[in-house]
Structures are given as C-alpha cells and as structure tokens.
Length: 189
Image 1 (spheres, one colour):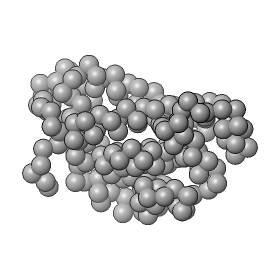
Image 2: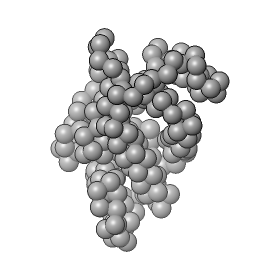
Image 3: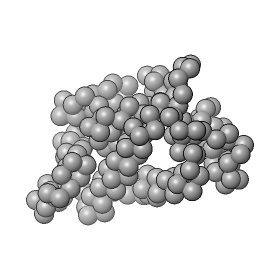
C-alpha cells in the first residue's frame, strides 16, 4: 500500500458521513473488500458525492443495449484521452472483470483502434471521443454510423451520457489528485 494521500483535499472519516452516504460506502466496502478512493475523495463535499453517485447509478445501471463491459470500454478510452489515472485504473479493473479479457483495458487505454474489440465497439468509442472533444461537431452522420452498427437513439444517448459524466469525473479526479486504490491494479488479471 502507498503512503501517498488519496486526495489533495481533506477526506472525512467514513463514520462521520451522513447516514445514507456512510451506509452506501460501507456496503461497497463489504462487497469489494475495500473502499474505492473515489468515495473518500468526493466525500469532501457530501451533497456532491450523493449527486455524483445518483447520476452514476442512473446511467451505469440503466437497462439498455450496451453491456457492462461496453460501458467500461467507453469509460477507459475516454478517461485515457482525458489523462485520468484514477478512472483508467479503476474502470480498467472493472472492464477486465466484466469482459474476462485481462489485456483489453490496457489496449483501450493506449489505442482503441488496435484493441481486440468489434467494429461496433470501435464506433461507440469513436463517438464517445467526439462527445468528449468535439461535441459541437456532432451531426446526423454520426448517428447514422452508429445506427448502421445496430445502435438506437437511446444507446447513442447512453454513450453520450457516460462520456459526459466521466468527463466530469476525470476532471474532478485530476483536480483532487485522486489516487487509484492499489487493489485496482491487479483485479481481473
């Protein structure tokens, strides 16, 4: 374990959090065996932590045509593009677990066009990167490309929402200098 702080901001004691947040964090700890540092770092502002995870759950747990692994692919590729160490490492771990492909997260963090993924998944990530970097340029042709891969308008919304939400997450992780938990590095390998 590292001795470096997990955030440049103060991190409250879990037991001093509002009851709903404390219960959420302890439930995650029980399931995962550790508390992901994102919970601790963002607990600096409890109301924002609550809003963050409510929106996270709304987009990530939503039923649709994207698999859990595909959602994580979008997160890893766009987080890499945003130079977010925390999200690449943490969501890379989740991607390895969901996809059962131990090399995939590293491939996506480097160059998704060389990764062992389908053309549909490459198109999804291309669109996510456009949302992240050039949202003002999104046009009907982008939708047509995704529809040609069997994605519908709700799927396209999902890709955009995941990308936009993790753009916020990437920026907050970089602002706070959020460190990935050591546990994430070996998960799913």
